Amino acid sequence: MSFGAHLARIWRRRLLVAGITLFAGLVAFAVAGRHAGMRYTGTATLVTASQNSSPDQTAALSTGYVAMFIQPSYQDMLQAKLGLPADVSLTAQTAAQSPIIFISATGPDAATAQRAAADAAAEFLREVNANLQANRESLIDQMRRAVEADTKAGAIRVPAETDMQDRINAINADPTNDLQLLQSNAGVTATSTGAKRTIAVALVGGLIFGGLLAWVLGAASRRLSSPAELMEKARIEPLVVIPPGGGTVAELQRERQLRQLAATIALLDVSKPAVVAVAPVERMPGTDKIAESLARYRADHGARTILVHADATPAPLDAVEGDTIESVAVRWLLVSPESGGRMREVFPVVDPQGVHGLLGMEHLGKLVTSLRGKADLVVIQSPAVSESAESYMVCAAADRTLLVTGTGSSADSVVVARDQMERLGVSLLGVAFVERPGWRRAESVSNDRTATVSGPDAPNRPGPTPSAPWTTSRNGDAGSGDSNFRLMGPTEDAAAPDASSKRLDDATSNADPKSPVG
Image (cartoon, rainbow, N blue to C red):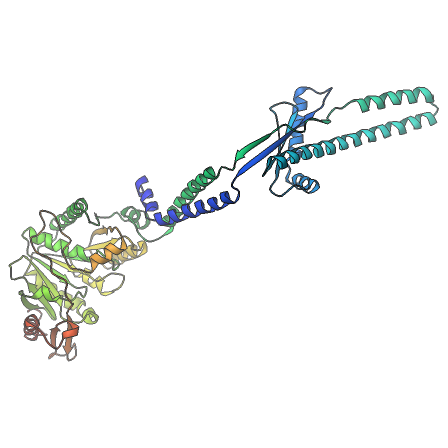
């Protein structure tokens, strides 16, 4: 996938990213508001005394004292011993490679901060020096015991005691490793809590985390959201990508891609007339328009085209008003426009629940045979592959099959449909990917039957106005020879058929159910 495809994956989940970013900003705002105001830092300075050590050794000793001071366990003990408030924090650092140590305390006001720094420095100095003095006392005690042992062994008492006292004086006079107070009050500095910076950092962090989460969710999801994901998740390169349309430029792009697909079908290396099945992998908005658009484009090019609605699409009232209706095969009606257009449509003469009985290989074979002599191209709109097992028989009856998928489809469903088609010997033309800008728009488009073709070269045929769908009724059993089929008007007024329904009644009642061709 390209970098743009990765960005698009994140952009499609922009609401998630925005929500996480906003949440992080709100949390940071609440924390910053709780600690809003000025913070004061008081400082006291200590120095490491040394007479016989080199400067680098003294600096290393100071670093060790700082490490001891900032230990969390020692901090807790010091806080409890000094009785410091919970909002006061202590820290320490050295001044470059020098023996000076800065003890700092941060608090809500200047007096508290300075007092805490001075108390912490004094307590730390006292504890360190007390431990060093204890070590010296232990050394002096050992020297005294040694002198006493020597005098008992016969040594001269006075010279031994004199030598011992000189050593004791030297030990007491040597302040090596001791801490000395340099300044108990080195000043107080006031700093802002940095609420703006805290909120900005939180927003940036939330944006980055949200973007990563959106990318991971997109990569883990088996739903397709772009043609690049069809290649990534299903290992299928789309034959053509149909843009969603909308604006002028988008409609031109959509028209260009549909014309490219129509040209590909026109150049198929199959016997004429050709039969092409358009099979959506899943029922979704936009996929049902591909077959109709292909049929209309080929009709505009002068080819006699028939569109077969094998997906149980009912014949709308205004699709047959003023048109010529004839029966073909068994229980199919061929509707030809009176205007002499080169595109005709075939509708099933059964209710949607019973259309599956017409999609067997025998019925489809008779239908295709009867239509080959009436057209140069037959386009069959198949039921959704994931919903109807008969879709495989529809595709098997065609010369070529175009699988149609799009945004929101399952990658696993596409792979299963392709593999099953190949196992059944269906000749696949390829996979078309239909993009769509949003659920609401796509759903609104799927509710009408206007052609998706637009632009200056679009067919000069006004789109039908929306009307109530036709329902069908049937008397007798489907397998009996005397079955009569009748297309009724809208369900709410089925008892009062108009002129169009009467013409449909005549066409269906005169058809011989046993005859394969009307």
